[in-house]
Length: 429
Image 1 (cartoon, rainbow, N blue to C red):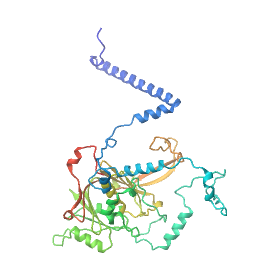
Image 2 (cartoon, rainbow, N blue to C red):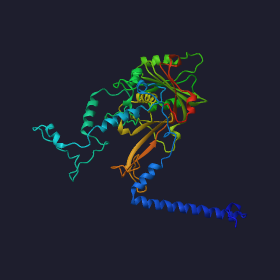
Image 3 (tube, rainbow, N blue to C red):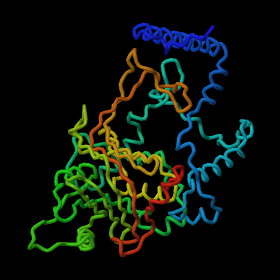
Image 4 (cartoon, one colour):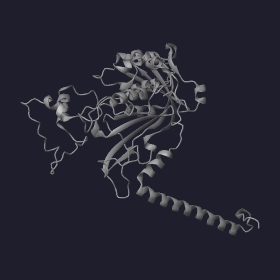
């Protein structure tokens, strides 16, 4: 007897019915297998952990390859070298933590406390009604923040328009990338970029290329960088055409710290050049996927608060150099009450720029709780969810060149080469 082949059924309606029947049987068997696996995993959670650890999708990021370099080459911080600087430092820190004993005998430290001193009493704000200590909320004020507020109040006010609800709490840029693990040789090569004057807020001069038409887009950049100003480059044929070097010399005399040039192609943003004054380096980025905030669905309007900064995915010496450049463009004192955050996420050498406003709210009944990177529920925030509202603009940057000084003739520290991208698993940032 010949085998039955549903594809050879002559009647079209009968063939469709047979196809739907086979499809339903497959979905039913998959659902039964899934429920059966869930029952077994509920009884034995180790089976679920083993399955999740095994079923990790293979991506290009997970297959990323690094250059083979010795300790001396890694310490030099060469920009063209694709080495994981953060991973090397983290491994050393983990080795040092392993040397610390896990158990500490309290009797060995009895003499550390003087007899005349008494243990400090626990304040009522930190103690609950049941006598147990409650964790302090980082979003609430404390005595330390009040002291810092009094200290900041004595200083001169910042040279900018006052915000509606400024926060006096001093806080560094929250960054996933640890900028403190930068090679010493890289710091010595760019001392002005890695050791900036923290007492002076960055002051950015925004301009465009010659005969530019993107005045509105350039004006939007002034809302991104606090303390920035936009100056048009004249397009009159009889006027003097100032070069980038002359503009940088003028900006240095006017106490500017950076010059940002927005380039265009076919009346669309195509490039972004950032000069670190007074003498460089100069970074050349290409821009793609430019979307204004007004074109984003459900967008919000930005305020005058200093934003928080998130730098994510910068792992090589060149990536740390770019991360320090972005960090120098924003004041190191974000105003937390503004709840504005700027994210620069590097993935496969593409830097995604996003600006959001966040809010913490109660979790709805239909929403899931927050999970960590390990897939487990995070303790203490079971009934809290974070809401985001994008402010815009959004765009994507790609680093093309790093000049030693200002413009091409000053020499290059690093230049993007198209042939390098033939290896899809090797990245520069």
